[in-house]
Length: 96
Image (cartoon, rainbow, N blue to C red; front, top):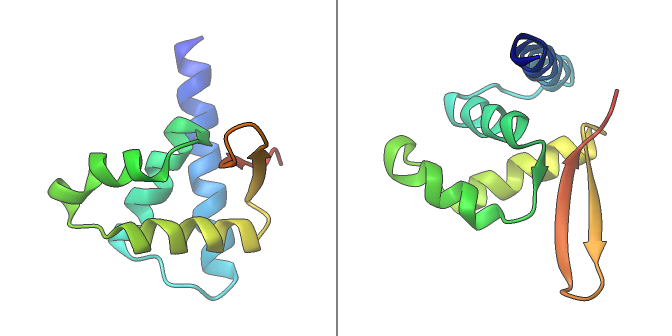
């Protein structure tokens, strides 16, 4: 089962990188790290937690994480759900 999860992660990560590149966007190291983290999580319910996890080791700004998520949403690679009770945005990888 663990092998299948790793394979699904790799396929998802590779597909996202290919789609971003094919759309004419740069694949910076920071963007790749953010995408890799999102692929591991599958659902992002707290963008700041990703930032806290990555900021010191990789010098990634919170704005860079938001802009990467916005890019993935614009390419149809992520979707947004709104939690009405908490007014929170939840970002999910699209199932393709």
